[in-house]
Length: 185
Image 1 (cartoon, rainbow, N blue to C red):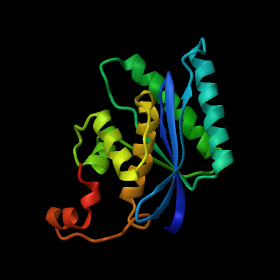
Image 2: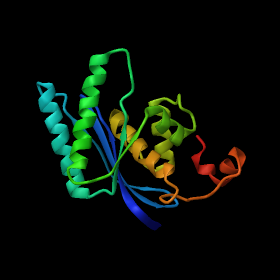
Image 3: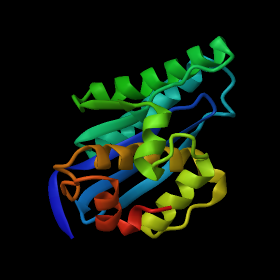
Image 4: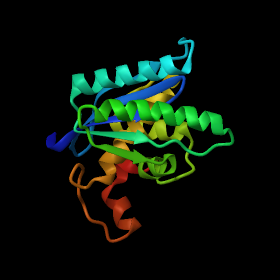
């Protein structure tokens, strides 16, 4: 596989109970997974300790792997403003860890990630995970949805940047489908 510039992407799916992460290498014709997992903070007894733990673990990941960029899922507006506020804080802890060693940040809305991965902005988490497992030829236990979401953010960044992937041009959707049969779900 051919390596390309800016070849390591750390994906983060921030959460107040579980934060998912994945590290992919941008290779052609498709990315390679180097690490995937979760940061579980459910057992910590207060929100501030959870934020510190997320910060520390993400800082450890960026220090160990030295990714070129961080692709992170943006919080989405839900019915509970308190939940969104806490989720935004978790995202901020992860972003601050990456910024502390000058890693560029790319934020993607959940819908944008789903469209990039499956072509459907209303796809379920399970559909996104199934596509990624098929596309990247790996198996992930269903209890690691957050890790799969982090992988989706990283792969979304890969797909959004032609210099990182196949950099083909397309005339229309039919041309895209013809040139990318492996991306059909």
